[in-house]
Length: 270
Image: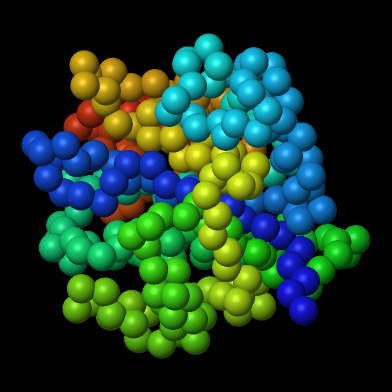
């Protein structure tokens, strides 16, 4: 029987399109909220309490994009004080040198997922305690996307775990290795966000990163949201960048040199 120690809730923000003059976002964000299975009930209480604080009807899902700014802040404040860790892969699509490799299907999502789960493995290995229950593995809970094949995800991850020479757009992938002791594809589940409190928190995390990177239609970004989450962003060896916040395909320093609105990343997360 499955006996995971951890659970990772996974959601995204932005889109996988490349028509930047036709409505596609410039950024695609994939985020995970990782916690011990024994703390899941605390997440239910967190979302319930925030819903009550904001005057929302019982059981109404908290969709970050639908909340007003003044309602987002207390939600993020509660997340920042919870016993969880966040990891986000932040893809600047215009910097991809061969975007054709990522068009069609869910290629960009899968490519980001391998980076995300590599860091989930590191986090779970680092956080494991002798007092923990379970076998040290992590249950993966995805926010359900109708166009996504989760069987394809299982097959993709099984190949990475086996360290096979997988192909993505003709490119062979060797450099990402996932631990089969931690990532078990039999423990993948999907739900709509309203069915799991953890997915509502993952939505808030991914959306916060997105709003800090993607300019609005009038040219502004809002970095305050992700800055508020700093206490729970995964840090390893004193470093956040490349761990809790992984920029792809180039580093934030290069992107920020071209867009000074993004200097906040280096100022707050060096």
